[in-house]
Length: 214
Image 1 (cartoon, helix red, strand yellow):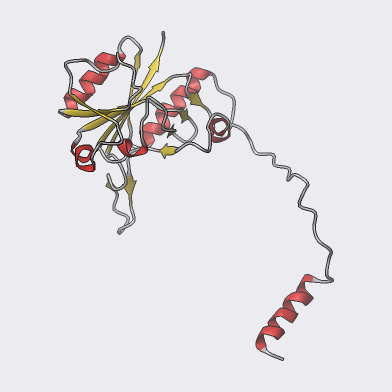
Image 2 (cartoon, rainbow, N blue to C red):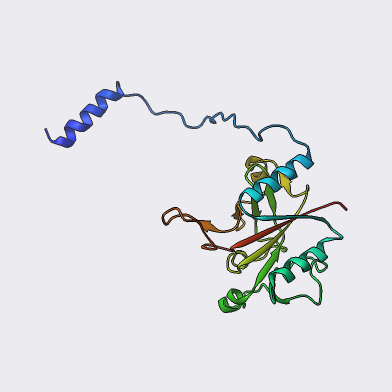
């Protein structure tokens, strides 16, 4: 008897008498919580802001009327001369006399994208319990690469309309066939001697603007 046969024999004896094929057609009952606790929409947005800040994102609040002025100020404070914009970014978000716009297009060269100072996008959904922003390549978000190469990303979230409490609630709103990008704070790693290094796989600076009101 070979060593292999001896080991397999022990496994068979440990498993007991051989059973027939198992039925895998019945659904597995899963009683996962869809969200943890009960919150008002305002409390859910507050939790999102808290967790975003925990991940070292910079959080701002404004309403739709104050959004253009706030975006102009953030880009000016950053010293941005060029800003990448998705094709469907609302026209009123950025001032006409602001930084030079680099439009997201298939013809956009890697060097142009790498030389851009900032990128401004919307988002598909924001998850409060995890402090996560999800982009799905929608018109106000553009291609995935425009949010990974520039060093400064400003993401606008309509609150509370685009804010959900939990991951299960977010999954119900997302199309898995779309190019989903999940962002929890600025890009960072601690792979080498546990020293945190930011900007490894994406922007070093993530600023999130929560837009409420009318």
